[in-house]
Image (cartoon, rainbow, N blue to C red; front, side, top):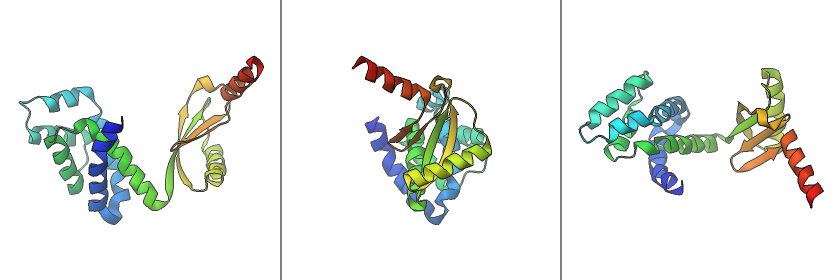
Length: 176
């Protein structure tokens, strides 16, 4: 997907520059646009030569439901005009990364075999922030295959303390 990332980067950087200090406030709307653009039926409609840019823009804005920020409206129009609607989820990912980098924050995905209560999650996040030496925005994903423990992904770093990982390590040790 390096090609998609290459296509998305200029759009994400342009939106970040245009938003300036208000970039963090746009992340919710950018994520909503990305979720809508990920829909295959919508992309098929947008790729139809008979569909006009204004029609596609109105459909997407209608699905998002909120009043789009003018900067996002301009981005959406540019993306549609250039046939890059499929890149919108990657644009959102890169935009969020730029916002996080400016705030000194990283997104973290915590995979757990069981649901984590809010109090426990706060403790886990505090420990992870110490471990990774930065503030984290954590989201929890339930993965029963882990059996127990957690697996944390922060950017390209992975911390795996799950039972599944320990069993795999034991298997490798025993078969070596």
